[in-house]
Length: 245
Image (cartoon, rainbow, N blue to C red):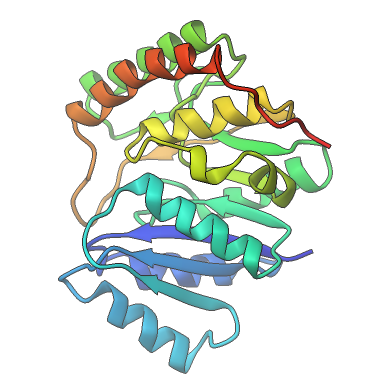
């Protein structure tokens, strides 16, 4: 079964080679697709060097011109994955906030435990976040609680960005109708999968704040998510979602 890890990047020269190597070193075969939004620091060149010298058959890159948003990066990657016939498609950050070893747990949930979507969850067994300021932990935790309440989904970590999708999910949920571009995109994808009848399973992980490079997170991103979820709920009353076959 073919597995593709999609990693969006913007100015990740300190991390990108190491995260690729960590994924490629896992005991089962993963391919990696980097979606780079025109990083001025040379991130894409590092990836292309690794493609040419080390991982020619397993590492790929799509270069985009400028910062076009996290959501559009993943949609681009999802379409690429479907076009190239991957069975399991993963989302993961480049900065080691997600432990590459946990890809194995997400894959097991989908391949062996019957999940259609596996979420690497920071909050399903409490609060498993390391080196975040308390204010940011509280903001993230209660944002997920709020989204869970408004949307009526039994998901503890609704804003999580570490996931595995079975291909059928991405083929079903009408990717061109996903509207959000920032972190509200993560909420919209989970809610849409839920509305389509797919089985979602949370897998406990420990999330570690990045050590190298700069964070792209901001209070404005969470504000977008909190306001967007109301629109998402209202729109769902008037939309007919395709159902899992």
